[in-house]
Figure (cartoon, rainbow, N blue to C red):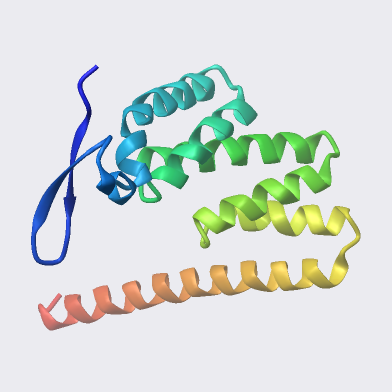
Length: 165
């Protein structure tokens, strides 16, 4: 089997490194694992379609460890966790729902649905002090959205007035 050759970019030059050479350790793990990316994404998407939320999340997590900015993996992970989290909430599995919400918020810190899930799970777990903080985050989010909408209306009115309308 022929050695796989990868390019490693240094600040001043690019050098070829064979998989059996001394420089093998310089080849990043993501370059060596790149052939695994499509199967993980494909399996995750298949699991989402089949409503296997936990399995979908399990496929998207390692993909994000390899390629942290992989858009499809982020979207898929958030969708899988949200569906599984709300399922857990309806089933009375509040700690599992909270864990799903917290993981979503690490990927998408401003995810409103995950913030709602987190707050409601904390209330159900009788962790009231944390729930108050989570509810304050929701209130601030809604207030900022309201302020943005008010500002947009004011800007539209000013633009209309400037045009003579």
